[in-house]
Amino acid sequence: QVQLVESGGGVVQTGRSLRLSCAASGFNFRTHAMHWVRQAPGKGLEWVAFIWYDGSEKHYADSVKGRFTISRDNSKNTLFLQMNSLRAEDTAIYFCAGDPPQSGFAFDIWGQGTMVTVSS
Amino acid sequence: QSVLTQPPSASGTPGQRVTISCSGSSSNIGSNTVNWYRQLPGTAPKLLIYNNNQRPSGVPDRFSDSKSGTSASLAISGLQSDDEADYYCAAWDGSLNGVLFGGGTKLTVL
Image (cartoon, rainbow over all chains, first blue to last red; front, side, top):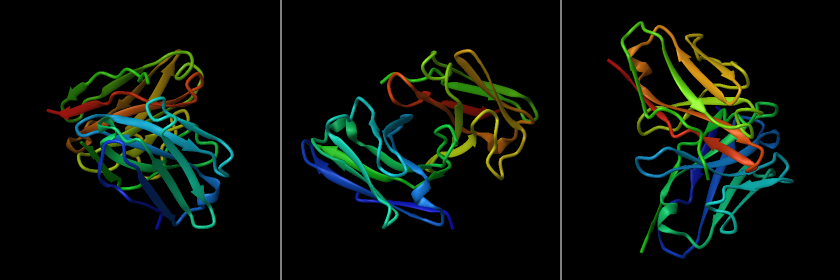
């Protein structure tokens, strides 16, 4: 069964850090680029970060650049998002998504999401 | 970060054909493929159309897309009540080096 399962969300104070994980199973994780996408309560989707299948390339949305770091461990089929200096506007459901080769950045696999709440 | 422009809402009656537009620029829609997602309340988005009108397994051919210049459209024919959902377009932006999403369109079946 093709699956992505996020974990690590929770309530955190402004300025603190949180690390999200995304465990992959049922597909060849090593060939997929991976992304984090977030959705603030009642709002639309916002792309957060991307990592190439081998970790050689990473890109970030301007809103998180310098604060968030995406990484992956292909030996453990796991994707990570280290979030530092969290702000209230980072409050959202965070989804991890898989992007297969030659799909034109199409996210064909999504996790169920993990909620991050940043409060003062 | 800028977004691709979608109408906030769209509607139609059962059996009708509806289209949802997505407007961008030369650095995103104008030079890269557009992907479409559908999201039901409280659930994760699901890929609907990708890479020039390709559909994942299980998506009926009632769903199709088109692109012209810096704009794209999703068409849904034979509208059904369970097509009610939020629809998002997305494309890679070569200037921003990131994926842009549209603001989303809430489709209501009257």
